[in-house]
Length: 70
Image (cartoon, rainbow, N blue to C red; front, top):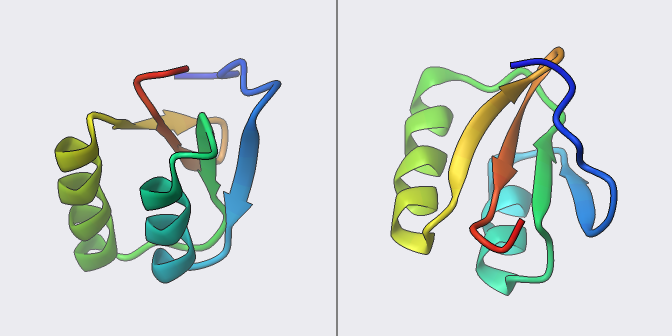
């Protein structure tokens, strides 16, 4: 996927803990994962996203968590 339209209510996370906190807060439609994510972290986030009704998508050069409200 290229060029997700992430204008609006988005944020960038620099680590898994920050991304999970943002996801749980429900305040962001898009959370850009701005670090070199490892496989264990990716699957941990993917599981949390599934529980929260969100998806992890690949954008140009990074992964983005997209909530169902997006």
